[in-house]
Length: 387
Image (cartoon, rainbow, N blue to C red; front, side, top):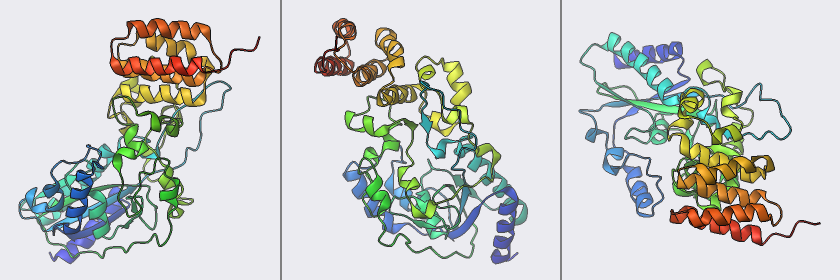
């Protein structure tokens, strides 16, 4: 079978499987990435979640024997919650960014790619070899997708497609089959800098690169104390950040509902914050375990829930936050709770001060101790309660 004919059959099969976009490119090295990735690493701008070996990210032949082509796929995901939880006075909720709604996209993409690989094997025989990747693989997903004609890399570093904007998950398959290549999509942002201007932390550099450590999405996924400069900016989004996508003109009105397993469950993607502070490991797994946002475990999400309660200035959360300082064995949780309490308390509350002063005496962790001291000093600076 001619490769052009096989390519058409694969495209047809991809539609049947439920892949929203597919493109083909060569397995030539991504030379233009090498200097960018090296500079990013030298400046400390990478997140540390990426594949560490830059050469392997640039040269497909280092990770695959005799690579000839790369197949790039995109699945479009929903952006709207059709039936959000009812608003109840005094009940504060957090929010997961859209890319974490529904079942973990890594699992969905792997499943689709495996189905596609089974089909190609059937059509092209057993001598064909493959290496599928999602997100955590060696190659840079957006670079592959751009070269394979799925869309262009926007100023925010995300792939922007004509049909679905940037609300797509990407995966790729390296193979030893030769396919006719698709045309790369030219840059389409023009002079628009809305994403760069809207980024609350200035993480976007404006040319598709970013300082990942400044990105709120990265900050919500770290395990230690969140640096103070990011806490207020996090708002109540406890996982990820969608701001650079929400403001993008290409995303206006985009909402894809192709995959039932990606649809958001309102109570899970907008969870009540207070119950998250005491959630058991078992309940955490049950409620959030299937979501991409749970990959770092319970602690970062609990820490973020504490920050969100502080940002809401939710007085009803004070008893739970004080309990965190008193009982939680994790210094990050104790320290973050102190920060949150100082944001919530609106006057010089002697009882809270007394509690924190006792806590600081017992605190053995330097970071948590520092946070509690900061909270004491912030509350002392507040006005006395009017008699």
